[in-house]
Amino acid sequence: MKVHVALNTPRFDESVRFYRTFLGLEPVKLKPGYAKFDVAEPGLNLTLNASSDSGPGALNHLGIQVHSTAAVREAAERLKAEGLATFEEENTDCCYALQDKVWVTDPNGYRWEVFVVKVGDTTVASPTVDSSCCPTCCHA
Image (cartoon, rainbow, N blue to C red):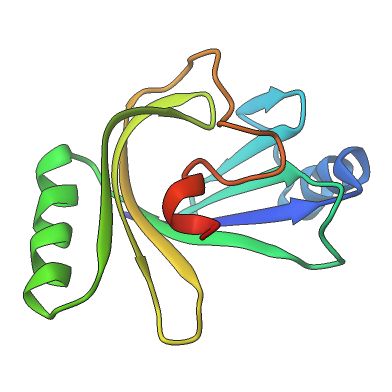
């Protein structure tokens, strides 16, 4: 399991350079308007999303990356059992990867996803460059 943090940035190229230096790593995925850094220790999946309408430090969403679809389903069941509103996606092509996921929003409005990457390199970023992968639940 690892934590996922997705940041919107109007200064995409500068941000990629900053996080290369800050983390001491090259992005494992670098596409137009999208960069992914996979940090082993501590476990972190950091993504940068180009955005023209976000201010400095704009949080896109948070997540927990798990190792299986079964773990995503277990999280979805746990959340629903507590009466939380969820949105589930299966085989969604998001952030240049095929994924299964469940979304939930905390009491402060922070969007969280629990997800598994099934295929790690596809050609689709997301529905639009200026959104996270789930416009239905995340931008409502």
